[in-house]
Length: 181
Image (cartoon, rainbow, N blue to C red; front, side, top):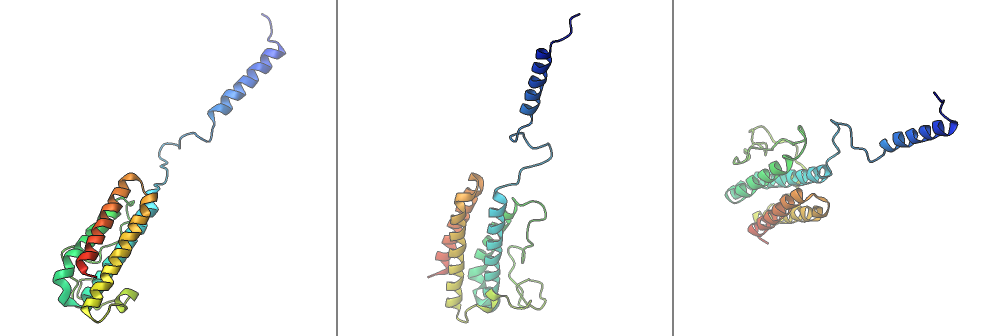
């Protein structure tokens, strides 16, 4: 039997190296069990936070002006449903707790609905105008700001999240119109 030539051994070594290096590329898929981060996660979290702040603004106005409950409670309930829809796409444990269950008004003792004394006033609670008409106008402005932030996020959201954000922005605009000037 004839022994291999140097040329044959060298060719086999180079060919093996090329095949080995070709199999290891930066474009290789992630190992099983390792998911790529969701690009919508940050957009969704910001939307949930903005919606929670809007719900807190409703709670503050309802606490300061309980006579407006009949007008504001249905809108506030929708805001809580919006927050739940947005939070549904967050990883487990990423859902912020609801201030109160949808369909329930804040208790006179505070916006938590527990009847316990209210927590120290937040900036939004301290900023509630004394006149009901002005309080409604401040809520309308908050709805418009939230709708504008949802619209601004459309460029960075996936198509599915963009549809949700667009629908919620439209709903927020209708809320602002329902609240008045």
